[in-house]
Length: 79
Image (cartoon, rainbow, N blue to C red; front, side, top):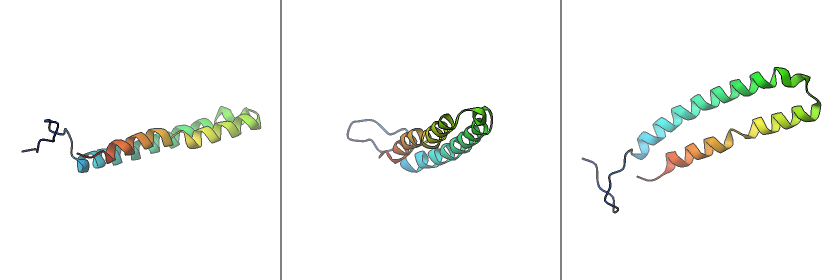
């Protein structure tokens, strides 16, 4: 039987469960994100000016950090 916390509710998921789910979701997200970024980067963006290409690759290279960070924060949340 799950323990009650000091606030009187039982946690929905334990840390271990959140880490397992979060790891699987993170791996799937990163694979899909990398595929999409490469598909866009190898497609029409090659016809754009160099400064547009640079801006795209900078943004695409860093944009995955925000959702991954939020997911990791959720995974690390205490019971």
